[in-house]
Length: 272
Image 1 (cartoon, one colour):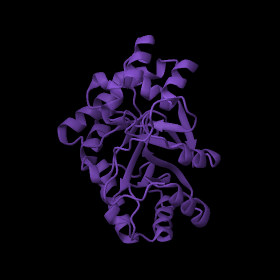
Image 2: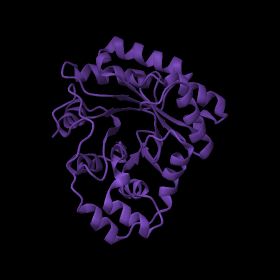
Image 3: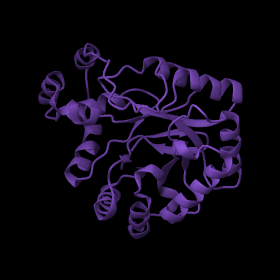
Image 4: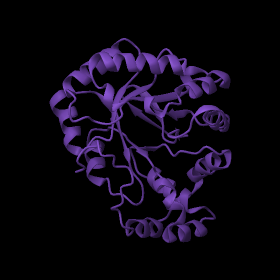
């Protein structure tokens, strides 16, 4: 598994997303992924599955140093005291002394951004998280965070797939060597039925979704966290790493429309 180095952490480029996984099903999915070789697990307080993930990690027998765990603070908790309480709760549920990466899950229109990052910085200094970062930040918010506040963010986790152009955000991140972590990398399952991806997949004896994932991970500075609850899907995502796309494949994918955003809640930011 390839890794990205960012703010002192070693981030596996392929991880397991766990949104909408809960309870015993979530625990079983994480146990399966860890057994297959996944070492990057992504969760959030809003997912209400940290306890199940903590149980899976505890039963895995994997050394803590060999595992990357990300969790996130919810939009309603972006005040200093609330952030601290939220991380304490997450750590208790995960049965961990620290997470590897703690993210602002969504920006809030009412948040005091300097105070948010001052608090996150203190939590990092205290060893409660090894690194801090953001999710769903626009280019404007990134510039404020990086250039005005000077926050040492380790990533921006955003929706990114073959159907959505994120080149402007990625270009900004690339210059600063800040990884882009792609959620919904399979376009919420829609990549599987795209005719262009199906055709490319047949050429490589692969599924269309595997082509979409390989395309993402062919880009420098990108990690991906596809959700996969079934062992077969988890293995298929790992097997996508074996595909070698050629120039014709990349040109065909480049021609796909890239204007489809599938995650845009009413409280979200005004996208650039």
